[in-house]
Amino acid sequence: MRTNITRKRIVCFGDSNTWGFNASDGGRFPEGIRWTTLLDSLLGDEYQVVEEGLSGRTAVMDDPLFEGLNGHTYIHPCLMSHSPLELVIIMLGTNDTKERFSLTSFNIAQGITRLALKAKQTMAGPNGQPPRVLVIAPPPIGKEYRNTDVGKSMGEGCDRKSASLAAHLEELLSTTDIDFLDTKGKVSMNEIDFMHLDEEGHELLAKLVFNKVKRIL
Image 1 (spheres, rainbow, N blue to C red):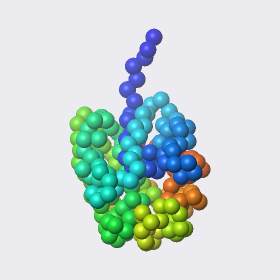
Image 2: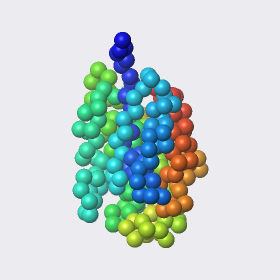
Image 3: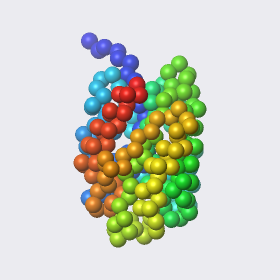
């Protein structure tokens, strides 16, 4: 006999590191390796983790080279389609460092904060209330990225911008009721393109997020 279980739903809204890009072969890490699926397993049957990762996604910028990557224009219908939600987890900022966007690190933090506030203002939570929102500062991009295949597309200064992103985010979010998690010094990017998580990074991130979620919900 099937038992109906109402699970607490969590949406993970991010870029290729939420989608699960595998820099070693250009494919996608399978379930059981992606941090989102590991988080789902750690949380157990009471929760459902929804993956909303898109490679190249930015917080608020329209990319002149690729379509549909602006998170700000998509997040409202995305969250409403998955409602009711207990929590929205946002991890963005890596793509926003691209030279063609001409953003400072503080600008990027402003954009992520704007996006998080928009998520907080949706009525996608239980009983038509706003959901809780957690912003994760992604691991900084390694300076060696410039000498890899992604270097030409990303442009200059991405590592410097990402290195100071967490501090700006923490400052801006401190005046809101949005939760924050800094991964700097706890999770590192891979040593292939220096801007994506490897298997160990996914595992470490899943554990960090799990501990944070259990304190929030």
